[in-house]
Every structure is written in structure tokens, then in C-alpha cells.
Amino acid sequence: MGASMGGLISTYAVFRCPESFCFAGIQSPLPVGQTRHLRHGASGITRGFAILHGHGTIHDALDEARRMREMLTARGYPLTYGEYPEGHNWSNWRARLPDLLTAFCERGSTSEGPGERAGPSLH
Image (cartoon, rainbow, N blue to C red; front, side, top):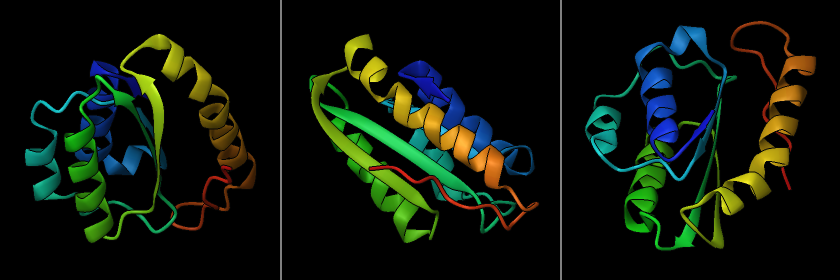
């Protein structure tokens, strides 16, 4: 899980080592290089994998976030996506943190093994 550059790094880590992760919490990832890596895909992503991707709509890389959403959806990755009327800042990311942590906890308590994990239940 990460915000801004941390969101980009989280995205990279998940697609580079999909066998190590079952969930990615990505908040306003910086767009540098992320679409290039997503085009190559990740063959090890399992059915139980889930991605929660949130982005602000004010002074944030919204166009790139929407392209990332389209690429993930087109490749069939399980994605929960949200846009929020906030900026690229800690106020935005802090407000989404409870949803991310709840999703992590729910996944951890309902895991049935690789490929059979329940998705996050977010509102």
C-alpha cells in the first residue's frame, strides 16, 4: 500500500512479484512509467487478487489514473476504483486509509489460500 510515489512503488511491486501479494492499496500513484509496466502485465496474478485504487480530482494525475484503470480493467484484474474531490495530498489519502485498512483486515480474515481469497468489501 502506498500514496503518490509509494503508490507507484506498490504498483510496481505487485506486478513484479505477484506471488508475494494478494492485495494492493494504491493511492494517487505518480504516473512515471506505470503504464509501460502494466502493458507487460503480470502472469502470476491469481483470481483472488484485489487492487484498490483511489485518486483525487484536484491537481492530481487524474488522466493517467483513468488510463491505469482502463488498462487494469481490460486485462481482467479485480479493481475497486474511486475518484474523490480532493487533491494530491495527505488529507485525501488519510481520509481513504480506513477503507484500505478495513479491506486488508477483511482479506486477511477470509483468506482460504492462494487464488481463493475473498475480495475487499468497500462502500
